[in-house]
Length: 350
Image 1 (spheres, rainbow, N blue to C red):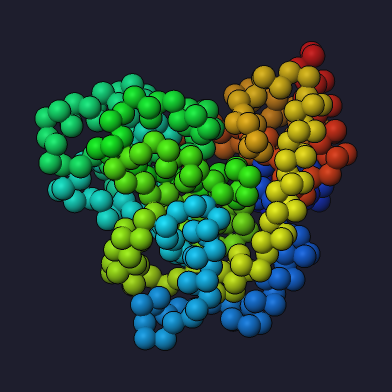
Image 2: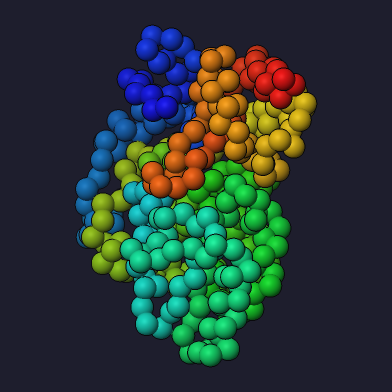
């Protein structure tokens, strides 16, 4: 069921005058309604304004972008990074950059549409993908294969072990990973998957992501080696687009202590939920990640009647399969988690 609301869906959500607890969305650290985070953002809006419509490549340049990109590179352990106005734009600049005769594009199952060109479709299985890549290399070693994946695919195929990648001749492959659901959460510092994927010794590694899901700002980013990041920053695609607002980028810098404390709280919430739910194996979950996926539509209906709203819609388009998830956030209280756990246990014991 589609619900139309008038306020931001934080910890609570009001539908037709009735309050529900919201366990959906992608606000993993619960920052968008957090007073401490909002105050940081407001101070930066007063300093930098609400928007900056000039090109990053103009003759007048704000230093806050380079400062944030240096920090992001340090956190994720990549050589260099650039920011853009959204994660989707970050994916599209990469997709368009490699849409050339010298490259052959391959999409893993569940790859996000942000990385597609208009005619691309993912392979149905990793076996099919791997066979296709190997066949291409054996027949045409002058055209470089480029493999696109989502780091967190919610089916458990990729992070943390990326088992299916190990069957590929990765030293001949450019690997591009969308880490929108991992960065800011997974890893000791919320560094995401860049360091993990480096161990596979690919021909080249590029990671893109949204900074909106975990970090609570309207921005995207691309991580890679210095040569690639420089090349992307010199494209018309990058130079012609307005950047993320400088107030958002400055907030990414200033809110690092808040990110750390909220990440710690999220991990505690995940552990508490896993402890309370009697049949946690009913859900598909990636260790350390706050999304718990399931396919029982009746559970969604049952919990909604109990006062809970979950993620439950066809994604990314109407013809796609139904996506049902319980998503924990740092803003959930212990009592919130107890209530929804009791609801799940009641339903599963019927």
